[in-house]
Length: 484
Ligand SMILES: [Zn+2]
Image 1 (cartoon, protein in one colour):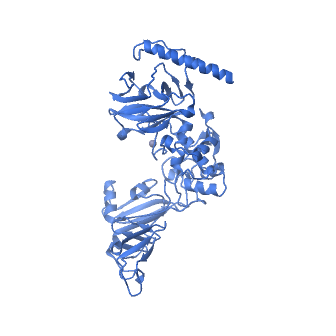
Image 2 (cartoon, rainbow, N blue to C red; image 1 turned 135 degrees about the vertical axis):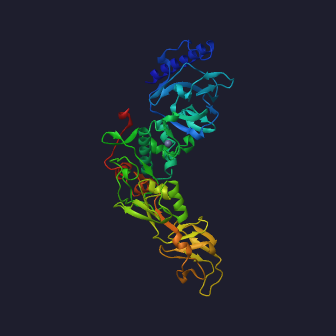
Image 3 (cartoon, rainbow, N blue to C red; image 1 turned 90 degrees about the vertical axis):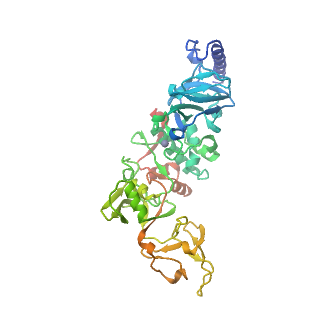
């Protein structure tokens, strides 16, 4: 095998030299230039993803790509690439828009390519070992290659990257790299499965996935850690399957105590994303409050003609306790909201919440809202000392210092200001009837695997397969290679 590799390497070097000579003799990008024999070209049949680093409203005017190993210019798609006969010895290249095309230029101003992404062309690090292929795109380091498409005269910046390399740039952003290895492995398999299922998600821009929570958070080489790399290595090529297909394995941070059916949040009923009580959840508390005016404005902006909002109620829950429906009651009618709209209409972090039935402390400016709070009044005693400042201790243990005059306390039915002594009982406050308090637990859409619960399971000794099968019922671990 070694000997064969050596021969192939020599053949490759000659192939490159030959390609370079031909190019030097021909005119720039001359289509008539003789092509070297294709078997001498490097090719890669791995699965590649087009990741949009900046696109749409974030599109740019210029891209600078650097590679210490130089570049090869390849043509490819999701299923791999082959080297072209276009060569350059430059280690810095520039991409600029021209009409609807992205143009690749070397440092001498020679146009190497007049249509980058649109033509399927990619500048790839010339490093022989795929592990060493590193490039810098507009100052940030990524693995593999770069290209660009043009929308509205601006460049969509694209990192073209092999899927295993991509997953290494995702895991540490989606899950703390200090999490136990079995949780990181569950995350790597979920991320790989999600990526495969979402190829072409942002096709309009010539990209598969973006780098935000809309898809999966990806930051490239800087995100790689030994622990997450190890999780990727141990699960290389592994995906989650259900009924012979790769799953769209959704995940999120905190369940708040229960997961939801996918169709109870969005529309598609995924058989492996079923709502259930989460035995392994960690608490994550949050609280918000709104004036009736704010809620009325929200209804107006959504075209709901229900007059002035007078109350908001939870009118339906799933059997797990997750909220299934909220109803806004107005002076002229009512408006009901279900599924993910519940979160957007009230600006909430999760479906596990209650309205007006928990104890709150909040400041007038809305900056220090805490739930399950204890109020410690500085210097207070039975004779009443300085009560101008209070310390509010949130359920998360954070202490917030604020003027007592800015603090309101409610037990869900009555509201009071800390006048005299906080413990002296509830007094009426006009603010009571005009504010809606909402407190909840959890953070995320509620579908699939809660990452903090995966961590908790791993800490209890569960393996990655057990974790995945607990949150994605009826699934199996399979090989990506079987689906290509
Ligand atoms: Zn996206």
